[in-house]
Image (cartoon, rainbow, N blue to C red):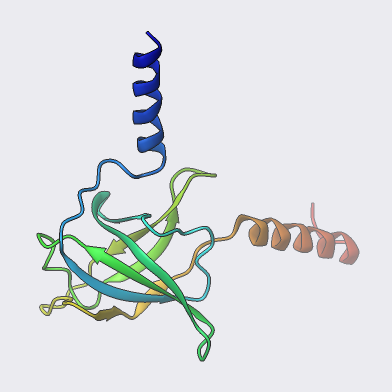
Length: 147
């Protein structure tokens, strides 16, 4: 019974940590640059239309442009991703893990090894949004605005 519990705990840990369910297959890598990646991590999913098509393979920092450089490892069967694809950092649920969602463009040319996705949207950082909301409410109170 203890062994069965240990096995169940192992599989649960694999699911939660994103270590299971994504087979390492040699695909192709592309880069995307973001002003803020929030809590994005290496091995975070890359999806298109809700389907996992790859994962984040590395995260770096460009000291010249002050941007995060994210390398995406896309599966080889998804080799017709248009070059004008839009990459955005999304969150699973309200407080869930962050991942990259790709919205395909209309180009007839496709991303290849070492291509760069130039249209990106950074992560929404919850603390910044709450701070902006509180600041605007304080400003309304000071100026007598509101209802």
